[in-house]
Image (cartoon, rainbow, N blue to C red; front, side):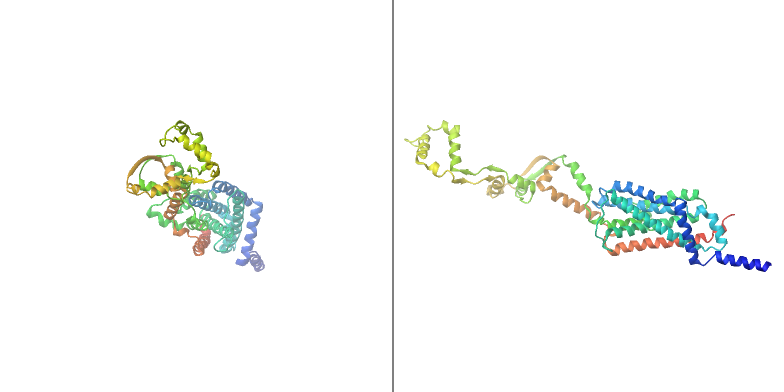
Length: 433
């Protein structure tokens, strides 16, 4: 009779505790039921809310200029790490007693962790989809072309998924170390701060602390998103803002006559071109000359002035009038339009002026006046190029190899933390009872 009971117990044990593969699907089913019935689905609307808030903050500068793109990349990394961490920070410690009991009954820890990996991967994928959809809805304009898959949104989604999933696995490991949910939630803020401070992108770190960036998920995460955002080829907006603020600042300018002439001769400068095109003397015809003479008070006052012994100025004008020369040649052009540019070019050829090209002239001006003379577009382009070159980072190069290397680093983090979770949980039976 005793033997029959033993055999029966063994059969029930064999039915209940199947192989590792079968156990994975059993626990995966359990996790999916918890998602529905224990409100684990609430992480999705929370992800949408976070994405909406972040998207509204970064949408005006993300993918537009260098500073805005770096800020946007950092913000997206924060979103991913936040979502991933709070997905799994309590999942192990909240049912530690259940895990311990089932492990003693034959549950394989590797199967349990694998089930969690599959479930958390699905959860992270849904969160990334929600995040991308919401950020696009609030106005973030993502590029179209990618470097690896030719679809930027797909590549960007892969990066966000890997960052979120790696953070998820890191929190899963922390959850295996913490014996209570209170302990896990106490540790979590320090982990988040460590990840964000030592990301290596936003804060300047002392030399001794730089190796710590290699221990963070945020470091390859920030690099891959910054690279995909093509940060190195974005304009440096701080320069433009600084120049705008300085436009009305007054300065004392010392220039030479030659420098002034060179600037006035720069025909490709928009501001100088407008000055050069201004007409000093309009086109003069014979008819306009007659009208000017007839209406001139000076000419009228001097009509009686003698030109020769027998002729006055009035006699000459009357004879020309009587001859009909005014009328016959009224449309004859005497001089064409004379512009400031014509005068400048004429003066520039004057040998006497060339002798004085080195003469120094002191004059008050504003930064805006100088920009107009030199050409604001050229100055801004030059300053932005120099600033962008000074802030160029090899880590942010947008190449397939660069992106793939960061992806592989994040995948390595995922499997390392999954392995650590499995190893740590194998010792669950050593807990104090």
